Image (cartoon, rainbow, N blue to C red; front, top):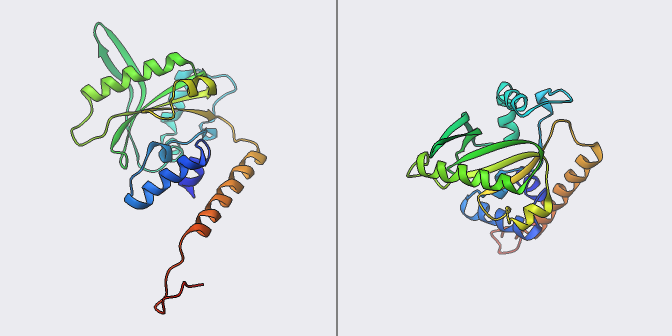
Length: 210
C-alpha cells in the first residue's frame, strides 16, 4: 500500500497500474513509485520564516527523519556538491543514491513556487553528474525539485512527469486531517480493487479456492 499511496497521489490510474505491474512481474522499481508528492517535513521544526540555507541545515540535522520521509533505498552522498562547468562553479543542494533504481538522485530545494527555469538548472546538474559521477553499472541520474508550491500548468507543458526530473511540493506542517483521511480511503479502495481483480488460486481439485 505504500507504493500504491505514493503513486495514487500524483499519477493517473492507468500509469499506476502499469508501474505496479512492472514491479510485480520483474521487481523493477520506477521513479513514479519512488518519488512522493507532497513530502511532509514537519519534523524539521522550522520557524515561520526561513531561508534555503536554514531548510538545508535542518534537513541535514534531521537526516534520519528526512531519509525516512524520502522512502526506502536512499543513501546520502553529499551536500552542496560542487560542479565546475567552464569558468563557473555550481552547487547542488543534496545528492543521494537509490539502491533499487541504481541511480544518483539530485535534490534541489526551492522556497517559492516552481519556475520553468528550475528545469534547465536541474538538467545541467544531471548532465554533469552523468558525465563525471555516474559509475558504469549505474542508470542515468534522476532529479527531484522540492518546492513550496507547484505550477501544475508549467509542469504539464514541460512534460516533467515523463523524463528524469520530478517536481514535488513539501509541507512543513501536517496536512489537514480531512485530506489525510481522503488519501487513506483512496489507497484502501484501490488495494481492495486490486485484490478483487486478482485471480483466485486453484485447489488440488481444479476448482478456485474460496
